[in-house]
Amino acid sequence: MMSLSRVKNRLLASLPPEDYALLSAQLSPVELEKGRLLYEPGDDIETVYFPHDCVISLMTLMDSGAAIESVTIGREGAFGLMTAQAPRKALSRAIIQVAGRASRISATAFSQTCRRSPHLMNLVDRHNDALFGHAIQSVACNALHAVEARFCRWLLSCRDRIDTDTVSLTQEFLADMLGVQRTTVTAVAGSLQTKGLIRYRRGVVDILDRAGLEATACECYGTVRDLYDRLLPDSFD
Image 1 (cartoon, one colour):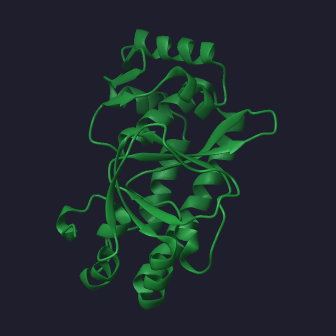
Image 2 (image 1 turned 45 degrees about the vertical axis):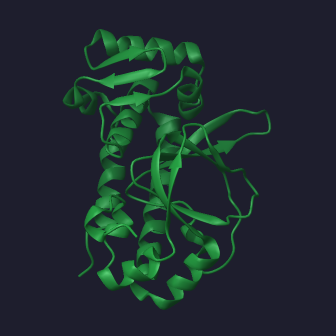
């Protein structure tokens, strides 16, 4: 069992010790490699994941095979919390965007624990509100904002969830997340590198100037961050 003081996942860390103890007895650690597929649309959600330093991407798929990222989930959240009250099926593809550690629990055990913990159920409700707001903001962002601004927003959001300024990503993955062609990713990354904001190597992005990225990112970065801060405080009163 991981002690509460060492927990990096914000949802778990915000639980009162007695409620965390109920849950942690059934949590198990897992290393999730980049590109690992957790769920496809329509799959039964059998496991709940609480990221510590990995990042989960939820991808919306089209019949043509095209895909675009709708939401990212990192240490501020979890995937599968909708199973708290009843079994659920995945609505989108869930894939590991950035490798790292997480804690997992069976959906059945999670649901049973929620029924014993009003604090945990409250946390689930808050998270679902935040995730819904995040998804709504992403719809507007993908439709209205330039690719460069969205790229900066994504890099900043990713950096907030991990412990390094170096992010390992392929052009193909970036193109899917942003809903653009690989050539567009190359052009945008090259532009940001010329401005001194990042260093872009094959499959790797190094963040050099966070302040510059924030100035270039669209408003959605701050909006989503503030949404999680408001709905998911560090501790309950």
